[in-house]
Amino acid sequence: MTLFNMTDVTVRLGGATILGNVTMSMEAGEIVTIVGPNGSGKSTLLRVLVGALAPNTGQLTKRDGLRIGYVPQRLQLDPTLPMTVTRMLRLRRKVGRPEIDAALSRAGIPELAKRQMSALSGGQFQRVMLARALLGSPELLILDEATAGLDQRGTAAFYQQIERVRTELGCGVLMVSHDLHVVMSASDRVICLNGHICCQGAPSHVASAPEYRALFGEGTKGALALYAHHHTHSHTTEAAE
Amino acid sequence: MSFLDDFIMRAILAGIGLALAAAPLGCFVVWRRMAYFGDATAHAAILGVALSLTFSVSVFAGVLVVSLVMALTVSSLSGRDFAMDTMLGVLAHSALAFGLVAASFLVGVRIDLMAYLFGDILAVMPADLAVIWGGAAVVIGLVVWRWSSLLTATLNTDLAYAEGVDPKREQLVLTFALAIVVAVAIKVVGALLITAMLIIPAATARSFSRTPEIMALLAAGIGAGAVISGVRASYHFDTPTGPTIVCVTALLFVTSISLTGLARRSSQKKGA
Image (tube, rainbow over the protein chains, first blue to last red):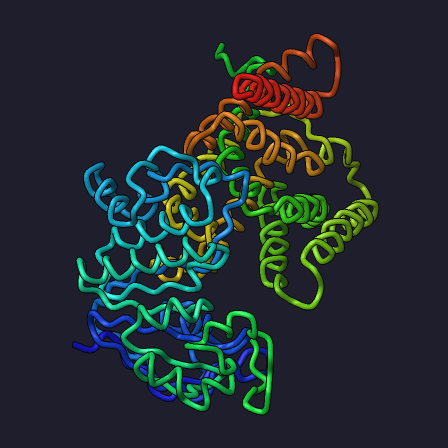
């Protein structure tokens, strides 16, 4: 079952083409990861999907009533805004204690319900956002660099959690990530983006594709690419994030 | 003889009306870092006063319209070439300066500028009270109705879009509510101190609050308490009433941060 179809989507911001003729779709239950250097339009693509940005040209059709759970990138809560974890989960939905406890356990943080958001670590914070997204029983879970700022172990644990969630809920997962080596192994399909789709396919296919290597270097399965984000080459367009 | 015949009672009721409307809105001003935005809107009120006296319309209506225009202008300018605080600084102070110059052109009408700059709460009439409480009811209703959408839009704009909330619409709601509060407050604390009534009670409530709702309710209580003690103190010491109310909120704020500091130090000692 197709969750959404994106056809020839182009986004221009301030005269620069951020995304050019991007065509992609996703099936239910699929884990798709978008990789690409800084400014390659990864976040822009997600913003088009959640409806925060309208494409200049091209078409986006979502399945009727598609429920999207969105975990934004590095959400900053202003320190003047008091917020408990429970209140955060109840912000948009009237949910009871059992649902909240279930969502928190599913996100791997059953003990945090009463804590202040400002007292959480980066990893705990992202898991609360995950729990919040899960409360809407999403058919499509969208994560924008959800592990930015986490260490390697935290990152690996987070992606294992995502895979468990996918198995339990059967939802599609679309992620943007910099943590190539971890992400590649956890994904069904990888899309390499640099203003346009350079290449896509199974992780092993993408890792050996010349377009991908040109962007991320020759590191084993992209592990070295973690340290080569900023390098540019002839492939780079004038794209900006 | 009704209790509204007493000018002290009318002053207290007017102040409480303002405090109740300013509290939830002030929380958003603090959370969204819109303090300067509040200033710009409030300073435009003086221009509104001058225009309403020129065209002989009600001061409330004139201030409401001019503040709304200013607030909408500021909203639409955000994200342009200048840093927002520069833009707001330009607008806030030019609005005030143009307002003062415009007021000086008024011939035949002697206006008491001090009353509009710092409020004239002791001169509040029963008709003013109706306007103040009516405006406060609209603002409170608006904020309560949009509460969860406003909070979501405050957290993150992309998250808001993903959850079916249009952050631009919520910004408009706040803009409109702010213009009403300014129009309501001009008689109570005046154009220069409106932002104080928005920000100080909310900031004072912050350290005692676990959720946004508690913060808004506490801010309302703190604001109302400051009005009551401020009006009494100004009567007792024969000081200007609007500024006295703001002084009380400021003292409460200092007390709250000192208490929080003490509590933190003692809990650290326990932990050591």
